[in-house]
Length: 274
Image (tube, rainbow, N blue to C red; front, top):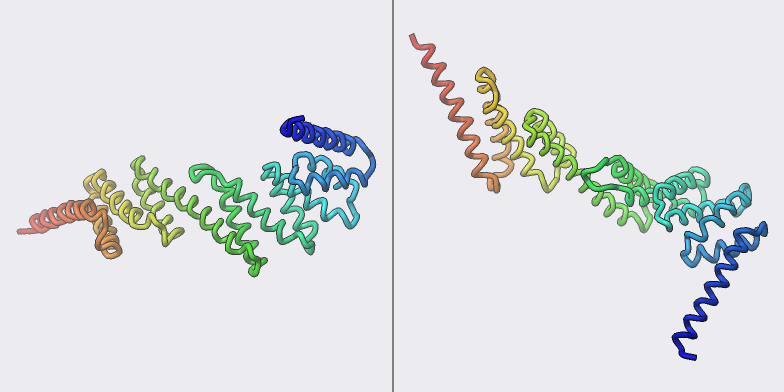
């Protein structure tokens, strides 16, 4: 018999035995058999087949010394089949139910990690992103000597980049829609929330630009005060970024604002002459 055919037959035979054993364990009331087969599939990483057996064992072992272990395995099986929402729920519940367990540290990390995995693109709702950061920080605070602290910090940095980008794009959207006061406020809040952002220079530049465009589109009586705001924002920008890539554009706006204010001051001076 060819070797390849022999291997195929052996694999088929093993699979048939495994399936038969699994079906027997599912239907059997025998706790020991269920436990043996459940652990066999769990340890192989076959979480899809381990899950229904461990779910039964949860009920059978409730109130016993094994309940803690099977509850933890149950959460891990949900994670293994990529049902992250359920996994997060069970890991979090495990921590509250078994706070002194040897599995609690891992459950705390996994609870946070499943939230990290559920974090969507930056332009979608950021609720799970913020909650993931909160849970990762909670893990660090609770287990400051854990060998997972560095991983938690790296994950939080990645999530903060999403929040940073979302906040900056939201401010940009106000600007593109010509809601200039709202854009200025949003860029200011962005700079407060992300003081070391890679978008810092552009955010300061956009504040000047929004102030300038808002002044230009204002009714005449409001223009002087709004061009004065433009000049004020320009000085802040110029001081922080003396060699900016936006220098040409920002200097042009400053000159236009200054020329307008100069002409208004000359008009005032002329009108007061006897």
